[in-house]
Length: 127
Image (cartoon, one colour):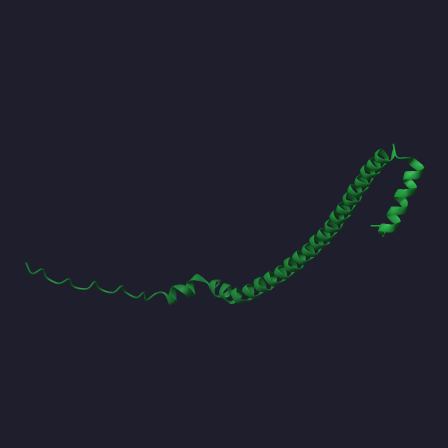
């Protein structure tokens, strides 16, 4: 976090000993340690919150991209379905024209029905 060398720490310790005094120095050092620990925890919490927010933004962007891709696929499938429906309707149109032929013409076509085949003779029992 800070770039402090060993000699700088020793100078700070000597100055603190002179200014604060030997009786209160351990209590002040303990309090400073607690405050430094709280500061580190706070900084780590803020970092974690920032990372979560960044991940949330990335997920929102990904969700938006997926939604756009789904819309694109849906529109292409709809377009293809319309093309297939048009093709099927064009293929069925001649069959519908044939089905629209008057019944008098169809009775002439089916006037000579094919007789069903005769049943095969059964083999005599040899008992």
